[in-house]
Amino acid sequence: MADMTCSAMLGAGAGNLSTTTVSFICESFQNITGSLETVTNQITDATSAIDSTYLLFSAYLVFAMQLGFAMLCAGSVRAKNTMNIMLTNVLDAAAGGISYYLFGFAFAFGAPSNGFIGRHFFGLKDVPATGFDYPFFLYQWAFAIAAAGITSGSIAERTQFVAYLIYSSFLTGFVYPVVSHWFWSADGWASASRPENLLFGSGAIDFAGSGVVHMVGGIAGLWGALIEGPRIGRFDHTGRSVALRGHSASLVVLGTFLLWFGWYGFNPGSFLVILKNYGDPGSPNGQWSAVGRTAVTTTLAGCAAGLTTLFGKRLLSGHWNVTDVCNGLLGGLAAITAGCSVVEPWAAIVCGVVAACVLIGCNKLAEKYKYDDPLEAAQLHGGCGTWGLIFTGLFAKKRYVNEVYPGHPGRPYGLFMGGGGKLLAAQIIQVIVIAGWVSFTMGCLFLLLRKFHLLRISSEDEMAGMDLTRHGGFAYVYHDEDSPSHGGGFMMKSTPSRVEPSASTGHTPQA
Image (cartoon, rainbow, N blue to C red; front, side, top):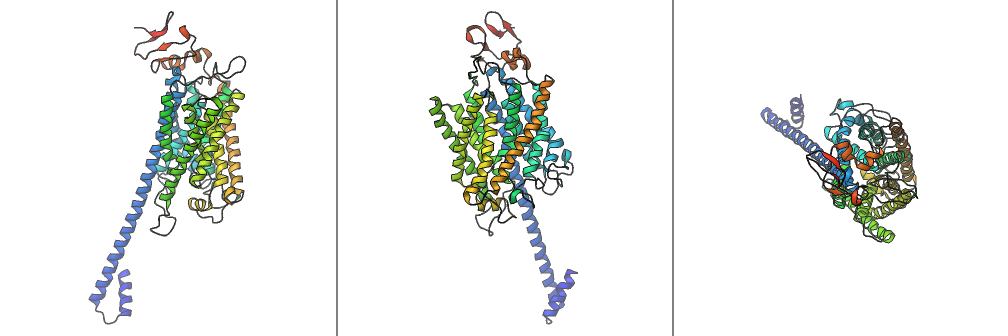
């Protein structure tokens, strides 16, 4: 048919051409057209392959943050609970993987759906589908278990193992996915990617999860720690705060750097694709440049927060404390996560400075009200995550907002950048609904666990340490300052032999 059309067109335009010449020209034209179509398909396939590889690599980086969480948690607790906290971090990934596969991904991104919760893709049924392939699932799973890892730090050193299993599955399988549906799914009622009927004409901008991940994990940990109560010895009989220091600053620093490294998958990776042009073909203005800018804003916010914490704590306590600096740096990273793609680098420095002040202030409040969080997780992720959402409503730049969230020209942007207050209003709504949803669901869960005596361990187990009483031994040789044993401390040695108490020297290995 195409050949006849080609011949007819040539015949009408050039009656002197022979039939052989016309056929040759038409055949050559068809070959060229076929070749161009093949090249176009190959370019499309290559683009998809590059974008999938980019997303998978980002997922690997975010998953590597679990190692950072494990090291940070291990260094922040006393040595007698090292094996326990490490096991809970492994559990977050394992239990979270199964629950997110069965339910979480469907609740978060199962489309088509309503504005509240997804309804498709349970157990990855019908995946891959348009816009939903396996790399996307893996990336979102890594985010889900990060939220669970945050919560585990708040309730460390006093929580029953079964409680970890229950809350981790519930958080990653239901609580977190519902929140991510609201703000990240195209069907979500407050999503900035919603095709129409945007909240305040803007939707809430939470690019990589200051609210969806960090606030969810932080507020869940807040309720867990409040309902459990402080660790034994954290406050004396007069109510004065007593420091129960973690046993290894080295592990804290190692964990911090691993988390910082993983954040380059967390924030830049949230673009999901990299081969996307914002301007004319061949221009440098593309998503690849936005990815680089996002990495820069992430870096600067963390650096500014770390330095602010360093000097702030020096003025308050008189010490240069590496653990405080690490927490401050992580607070800056948690805060910039919401607006990392839509703010200028200078604004990221402002974000980090204020995030450090928020963290210091939250820690002061926690001490005043006798709230005990061994990793400052609720203050860091909850407090700084909240600031990150507000910050985005103040400093989001018009050009970047329209590039990252296209399709709605004239949409609101940051208040301080001349964009009015609608985006800020959407951000405040996000803070309120996340706080309410997580408080209701996780607060009820922790209350139920306490009611059925599944939440907190006995005081005897807590004093002895869960490594000995619940996990069959100790991680390595250590001395604990708060031990009631001989000499104000005792020594535990890792050994394949059974560990039994000794009347004269405390706990020593017995043959």
